Image 1 (cartoon, one colour):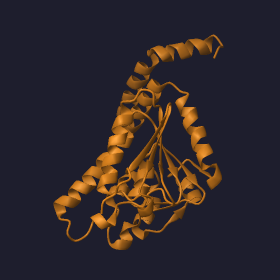
Image 2 (cartoon, helix red, strand yellow):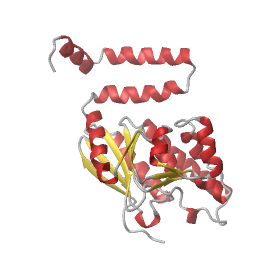
Image 3 (cartoon, helix red, strand yellow):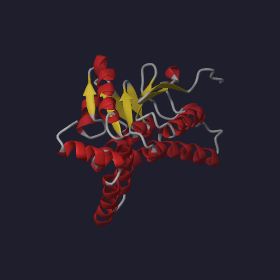
Length: 255
């Protein structure tokens, strides 16, 4: 099948950029083309100093329905599956390594690798009608790679229940479990995403980028090493020019 529309729509409106998964008829399934296109879009964003926040959403009725099962049939060999999941994992890591925070704008369903995508974003705002699942187990395929992101966002037993049952959870449950930050009525989704993005875009981009990098790095360390890394990051941040301007303004009681 040949797809003529771009896999990812890019709406650049500094300081924000909106990346929209654009396979609405396929519920924005992560085909190999979609994975490659989104990875390229993120690489361009990473090098654009005017962009401070990324909003990632989906066209049509869903956020993302996970991998495209039409690309996972019996004709695919083990090497092909290894490449597919490696490319998808690289994409997920690119989101975490991006200097700019990424906000998932979630409506409809976010299943399997689509749920993984939500979990890998730095923040997520969901419509009250959104639903989440890691449903590969229903096909006999444990969602192993999505489990990496899910297990770093929600409590272990809650993650395992989702992974072993494949059951959907609603948006309020996803929020209570830490998978998303905020849940709003569908009509308010874009307003709430914009509000959150604007609040972040108003902050020092250097501090935000350094803080994001440090946050994920320290999570993988023991507490002593985490404090050592964090102390060095904070010291370097403190001597930055814009930080010193901010401190001076605060002590002088000016904006």
